[in-house]
Structures are given as structure tokens and as C-alpha cells.
Length: 228
Image (cartoon, rainbow, N blue to C red; front, top):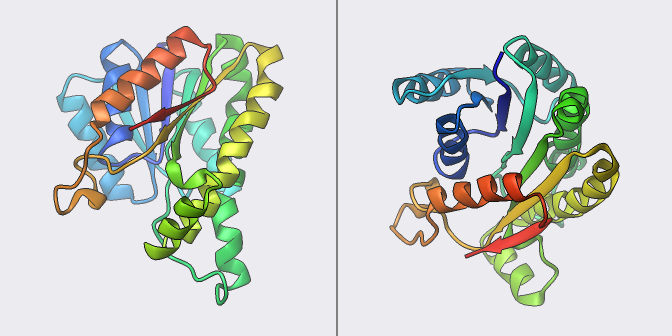
């Protein structure tokens, strides 16, 4: 069986370009998203483009669902690469957000992320594989960044991406002795063709970001790169 690239949080933009880039390189592709119809339609589009792809609906913030999803993916082949691209666009007010809302951020960006890696660990170790993560510029601790995140009601994603960014560094240190590479691309702008590009303000080409991910997985040297 061909090795599988597991794309978690598939949608238009970077994740779809990553699926196509690795698919054209000969990998089987497993795409994951919460909406069952959407993930089935997206997988069909990849197959139509000549890529060996299958869709797996899953709530990536639910650890038990994640474990079941990874086990199902593994029946189609060993997982050599995990691309974690999950995102939540829900806005929260830090002064009024419920405990459940606050926890949901970490359930996705940290708990869900680590659960995928834990579940796929044996495959990744056997393949000397890679964990690739889409980061966001809101992860950085700068007054201007924090003011912008607040202005755009993006505190949830800012908190999540900041926690995820630290997790990437810790995970890289933990997995290096196991010969599993960890790499992150921090996206510093609006990606073309996504919901955020509704007014044509996107400046970042998702295909270029996917190419960077592919290079990182091949070179296995850089931990975090900013992309603008």
C-alpha cells in the first residue's frame, strides 16, 4: 500500500493545495473535515484530478472521534505525513466567553492536534515521517498583532494559534529522537480563494504555501517559517 498523507482540516486554500501537491507526488491522500458531504465532494474532486484520495468526516476537537478516524485511515495505508490545518472562525469576547467556549479553542488546536499525532505515531516513526502545521500570524505576541486580532473578533484563533505554535516547538523536540520531522508555515496574510478573500484582498497563493510545505518535508531542517 502507498503511504498516506493525512490532511486534517481540509477546505479551499492551503489544505487543498497540500493534498494536490503531495497527491501528484504519488502519495495517497486522506482528507478530514467535519462536514461529511463537503469532505466527500472534495475527495471526489481530487479523484477527478487523478489523485488517489478518500474523505473522512471527523470533529477534530473530539479525541475519541479522532482516534477512530486515524484507525480507519490506516486501513488504507500507513500514515507518512500529517498536515494539521484545522481552524475555527468563531469569535469570542474574552470578558464574556463561557468556559466551554474557551476550552473549545484548546480542544481543537492543541488536544485535537496532539491526538492525531499520538494516534499516528507508530506509522510516522516507521516511515521517519513528518508533521506539518499551518500556523497563523496571530500567534505572535506583539501589541499590533493583538490589537488587530481584537479588532477582527479573532481572539479564538489567536489563542489557538499561539498555543499551537508553542506545541509545534515542544513536539519537534520530543519527536526529533524518533526521526519524525515537525515543520510549521506561519501564514502572515489572507490566502487567495478562501472565505477571507471575499473582497479579493488575498495576497497569498495557496499553491506556493503547499510547495513550501513540500520542501520542508523533503529538507527536514527548518522548524518554523513565516510566509507572506
